Length: 450
Image (cartoon, rainbow, N blue to C red; front, top):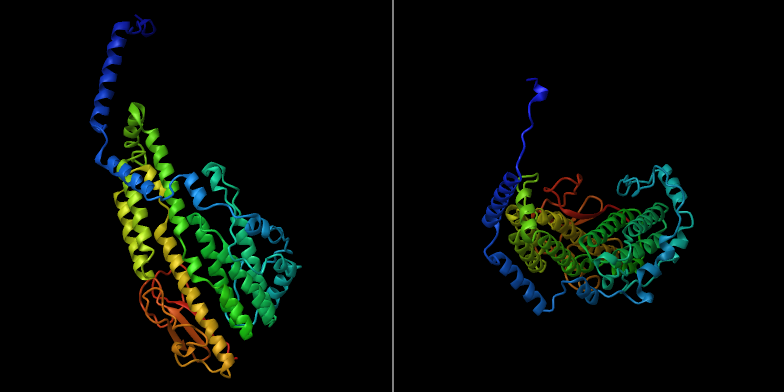
């Protein structure tokens, strides 16, 4: 018989039924092995914690977030008040425009002529930009639309925010390069006021606010090394440097908890029933070899949120180290894909925010020193205690360890500094390499002789 004449094997209806029954029994056995007998201890703990949050009136749903973070009235809505500033069209972006090219001039050195020319072209009509930003930004808030629910939030303005902040920084550098203290002070004042007005509804929002404040710190240090501001201008700048605003993460914790709960609830529903349990089992054997959802991870997330709220009242050094511990605990014990989805890089974000806050504190102290110099024939204070009470209400303290802020006279000028996140006094060493995580301090250095 030729190979092609070999009869094909036929399966009877009965054998197909038996095979189906066997497959069903095998699947049922697998489900029986992995399915919990009633609510697990972790699920009961999750429900108990969520119930406690609701009993305490803690916002969890989008509707509750909307009541806690209502949109402002039009007269305080940054979307409307800053619309003209956002729509400002700068001139050509030359290759030498600092901030945009990330090529900042060396502190105190003359700004190259080509850089000044590119900044001048970029800043065409920039006085109109400053005029479009209200002098009083107190209580300003960008409408978000939380009352519409998470899926109907208003479009983000973070790109506009970042661009406006960069233009204010370039304006400050240009005016200080020209030696025009009053104009530099005006753009610097509005830059800090604008940075403090940025919402902190989510971690992304808050870190944009931190980045804006950090950029203005860099710019202020450049300006202090190039021009001597009047006492009045120094006071106006100081009034808008708000470390406590940059450090306010209360809304962030609330919103990020909501987003996590939303995600965990959705994924829990997705993995309910036999089909969901089967999907969860299959995912254990597929990259990244993790189940979609685990009650244990949901509980880990809620505990993490509770721990970070408690940590935020601690000194910065304790807070940064605490975040490293709780983040490590979460990543070590979390086993599901959902856990990966809801956990941003909190440890890195909190370190950056903490060092920005410390730098703002150092900057406020430098502004007080500059006022002291104006009142004392350019003499530097012997210690920071000499600034009290005429230039500071109390002696400034390092927010990292709550010890007196560090201050050191230099051959030309001075440096004010915090020990930073490594917790070590490095004698005012600047952070040259952004990737360096130790052996530096958080500094504001002024080397202008007069």
